[in-house]
Image 1: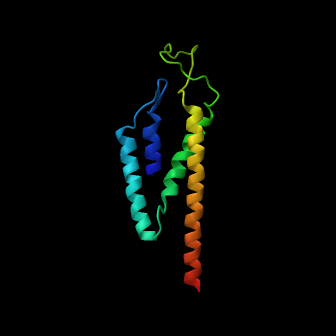
Image 2: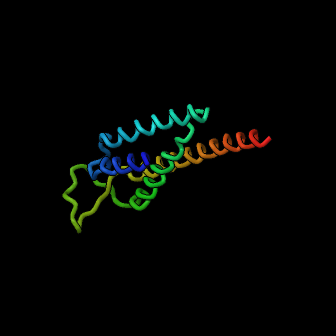
Image 3: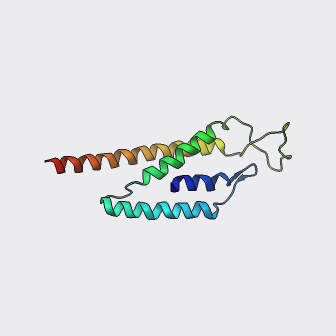
Length: 127
């Protein structure tokens, strides 16, 4: 849920003038994710347990949103107003797409590590 909150807050950060600083909603979501990750890590007994869920939620959504704009023309500095005849997009969509793919890969690695720990616990419990 907090991954979606960070996603919602971050949508307002990308403007035709470029990437803006994080707003209060992004910071609140990141703090909540950090606190929940610390709590889960302590309860599960291994570092960064459960962080992959929020990361995957954010990264996949950002990748899907940005992939459609990778080939769109970026807005130049001091561009004219956006109209039906003039269209440009946030200049960082290709980099944002690559960043989202890297985050998705990191989330998959985190999921695999969490799954390994859960399977090890299950095999120890059953024996």
